[in-house]
Length: 426
Image (cartoon, rainbow, N blue to C red; front, side, top):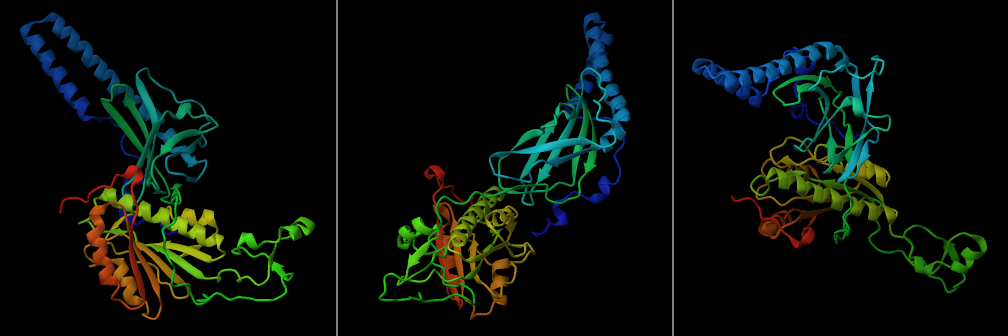
């Protein structure tokens, strides 16, 4: 299974071993309003402005009600908060789609929460990817039906969380009590990449130990000879008359055999050069790699090839189209200095997709290439969007082409709508 995120990306567990005290925490706005109200009350008393004094007295009474209401409800529901749990109705979704959560109250009888007027009770779903994408969804736990509740999932990624939150706050937002609800740290939601509309034009020159480099023809003068259809055969060579009689597919002999059954792994190098990529642009760059890796994987699967995928910090994983897409939800944008490694590959051909960079210092790609035997061919593609990266990509091609066994090229894909972002100012 894909690896879990680094512990550095999650809040310290020590903070979640116990719930905090139930004293409502004043928000910055609440502190400012309390100070202004007290100053106005003092000014009204000194100047003997009865109307001003009464108005501020009422306002201070509202603040006191908000504070005491949140405090009392926090004491009442402190144990109830521990009984709440949220799970995803569907673990995998598409970016731009909606996730569905189901709320349960273990051992609490399922009744509604006791409330005071003007004091709100909310549940906060907290999800984060390793590279900083977040989902925050706040809802009333009494408003979740058996059919669940939907929330938006805007971007690709594997979403984890160390804790959700049970919140009690006044309707003005002056005071808040927050109870963390610990989670197990496993991925709770996977936003799968969508395959690119068109596969990148890559001619794979490495195909593993079982690859045939030349087509194998079976020629015969008897045009009535046939063999069973194998995925990868040209559909135009199918004998449809035989299919109409027997229901089985056959192709005419004398045609090339199906494409070679190659064993290939598609690696996604998720490290981004901070001189060329902002954090947001790095995340979009890794999305681009994942979308094109998935499109290629699906294309090669249709050809009957044995395909696996992997990414920086992860393990090699094969499977069907759905399993490959699930694996490609995990890659997260990392800096070049990150300590994660690309997995070693010994018995497969390799197609490696990477982002252009100005330097290879501390890069997982360079460490991977140093460990790989020169006699093992490898296809390396620097894939990006935006003309501002052309020079860096060309430099990468010149540099890595000097290494034995590497077939290197750069490919630029246009942005939707024809827009190309510029790299950050150096």
